[in-house]
Length: 236
Ligand code: FPP
Image (cartoon, rainbow, N blue to C red):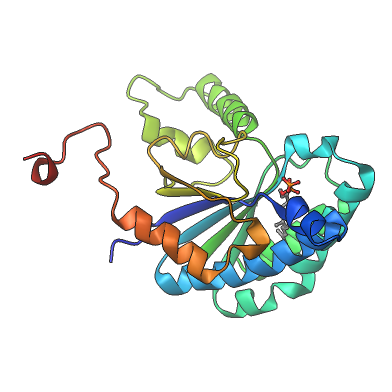
């Protein structure tokens, strides 16, 4: 089986999932968190090494204070206690994004989960929080400029070399999934997705269960990835 090494998910549709049921939007985020916990374990069991998820974008701060506070409190709760099963399974949790303007208690919870799971080596769950893809490239470019000022020779600098200037030095994304029906990438992991396969589904994220995930993996296995070249076997 040709399982993708790095899968990324834009977890969209929590709000609509809740509204459709006559519930507050927050109920959708809560259900989405449960889905995420199950998917992280399932992806690892299938052989996926890195799962990146878009939990909160830099632009999500435009939402109501009530919704932002709910999401931050939920994330704290998951980092501090609810992810215990996933932690025991050997998943290393890392967080990508800018620290500013995250609250102190959120920063503390990030430190806590990263510290608690730093020696786990079965798989990585990369949670993008206060994250923007263009911001990540800018922040990386600033770090690179500092190294150049310190004398780094860039005459042989290649695109692969830029990964270590990103928030974490992760492999390129093989499969990007977006739930919730929109067909866009919304400033998510732009550098890492340059050659990824895309899978868009109308399913709202809380309903994106193991069998939905398997459909995306099945689609991926049947894609012909050429990375700009030619697949001799398939074109003849
Ligand atoms: C987008 O759906 C979803 C978000 C902005 C938040 C995603 C967060 C989670 C699934 C919880 C993450 C939890 C942890 C523990 C990391 P939306 O609210 O924009 O949905 P809509 O498009 O239907 O309004």
